[in-house]
Amino acid sequence: MVDRAALAAYAGYVLEDATIPELPNHYRGKVRDNYDLPDGRRIIIASDRLSAFDRNLAAIPLKGQVLTQVARFWFEATAGICPNHVIEYPDPNVVIAKKLTILPVEIVVRDYLAGTTGTSILSLYKKGQREMYGVRLPDGLRDNEKLPETIITPTSKAFHGGHDEPLTPAEIVGQGLLTDEQWKTVSGYALALFAKGREMARERGLILVDTKYEFGIDEAGRIMIADEIHTPDSSRYWFAGSYRERFEAGERPESFDKDFVRNWVVARCDPYKDDVPEIPADVVLETSRVYIDAFERITGQPFTLPDPNVPVLERVRKNLAGYF
Image 1: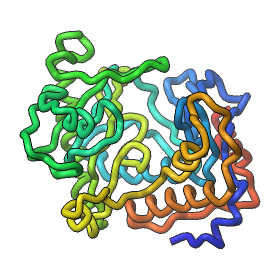
Image 2 (image 1 turned 45 degrees about the vertical axis):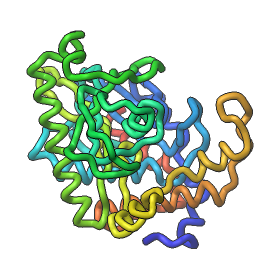
Image 3 (image 1 turned 180 degrees about the horizontal axis):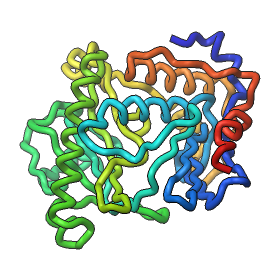
């Protein structure tokens, strides 16, 4: 466990902008900077930007490294289950990957009646809906209860700032988003990946509640997983040791609380309308600590702190010099 005193040295150690002019075809996403090389490879640099409410709120020290290395852990652990886009990792914040054509359906796998958004299965269930995403749920389920079986809740993939929309398997095939064979492949991969993640999480005292997967097709037509897998940003984890007691008491399960920044902002303004006040350093550092804790609990490995005297972008540029 990285203690707070050691983490204080990284208060200003952030990668907020990963613009590297020597690299071609730059695309800046919410939290990642991407560069497409002429030979079909893609450079993906995970920044430390924290995005919420349709804006970047802050830069969280070491967040990009945590997400890249958690995803690496899972890509390596599941390579025998599903092919992935990874080629190599030249830097703790960087993955060199195959450039894929991303499929227009996002696959979300769920084991519990949970969620907070208006289209989550918990929100829909509490409104009385029992048929959703092509699945029928029984009456009598309680908030955060284990589902009778693992389900997939697919949504349309919004590529240009639109909103994801719920889909059923019949709609996915009927609308030509995926062929029947493609749907069978991605849903089979998703369930197998989730089962492996659930098993490994259980060994570490965690419950893998739900997660999202993004799949793409390479130049040979092979379907493989892209983006990230089982990270604390793409997945919901609960602590197994306290789950039963909290569930029986009707309390929210204990989890990695990465929402310090979001909660701090919401308590002080309407982030969709108002200017966001400057976020205190202690709130930012506590969020960093939670991300590092998540890495260590999920992987069972100690987190490697980089040299705080070498700026992140300087290190990334040096490690990517061979691609200029």
